[in-house]
Image (tube, rainbow, N blue to C red; front, side, top):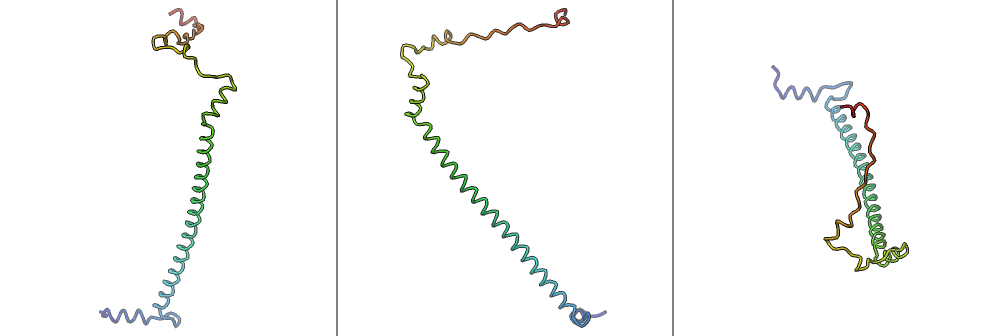
Length: 126
């Protein structure tokens, strides 16, 4: 049996067309490392552009929220609402027209009466 150091020496000395096998393995490993770094860098660039796009969307949405809040504040101004209600003929309720708790059942709308539906003759016979 051949000793381990001798086997390792043979592996390092083994040549293919004048090039040692270990050199071929080293070049392949370096090429694989270069390729993997290139792939990782390309993936990082894609992720970076995606992050920039999302941050831009966030900024746009924050601006929209700010504008919508300002619009809601403007639309909810009491003076504006009062002017609009006067334009369509609404006004404050007169104190004499207010109802107490006891008068509420009298003010309730009358229940809607449904028209009698036609009952099929087969159901009427049973």
